[in-house]
Length: 193
Image (cartoon, one colour):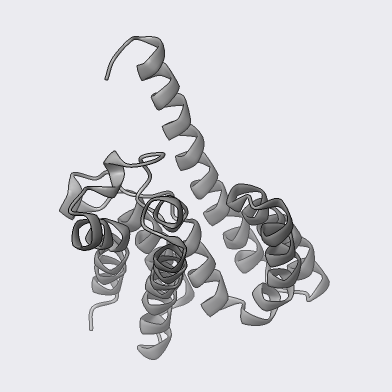
């Protein structure tokens, strides 16, 4: 298999619009027209039901893990594996099937990092889940997960490229989130609908 084909496959896997499909099936609506307008598990949790939101989280995380595991299965070089993971997040955030308007990529990023750094992610999952259960805020829980992950990776002597990658993907998620919030506030401020 051509190595760059794995990157394309990663994008396509990421672009499978899980929350959109569930929204259409369960409510006959576009999830991007509901709640906060995000095509992700958090919005699905509030708009389609708790069980559905949790299921979508695991499916979106599995998309990221699958993209990386395919690369590992075909013994792809590290740069192809990391690029494929980033492509899966890009596919989730900007899916070709839905006019390049998708989610933020948090669950997909967690799935990618779980496949690449399983021990580190499982260690940081404990405080992140504790924050999620006590604060009921996905964004704060994700921030805790990604920040502590940096410390755990340093403590575990994870290679520098993977440490950088475990920073870069969450930054991509954060920039996507803040750009969409800024765009939404700008639209409201301009009186657009």
